Image 1 (cartoon, rainbow, N blue to C red):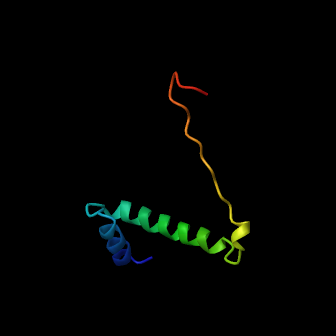
Image 2 (cartoon, rainbow, N blue to C red):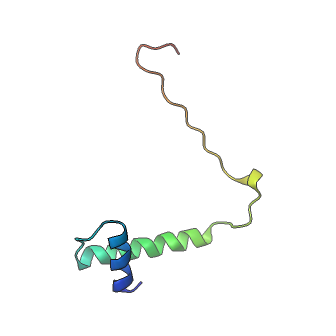
Image 3 (cartoon, rainbow, N blue to C red):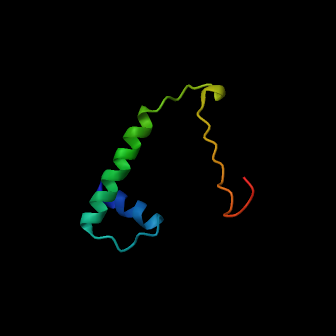
Length: 64
């Protein structure tokens, strides 16, 4: 990723004060995320999608 593009993405995220080292880290992170996203299957049926369900813990002293 070019330095200018990394700077544009950082500015869009509100990260306007990053130095060159941190911009390089941001660019590397974005490239890694894109690489991982490209490896995900794109042709899953909606029934095959993973659905995570979270349950909140009951308040302390509450009924269980």
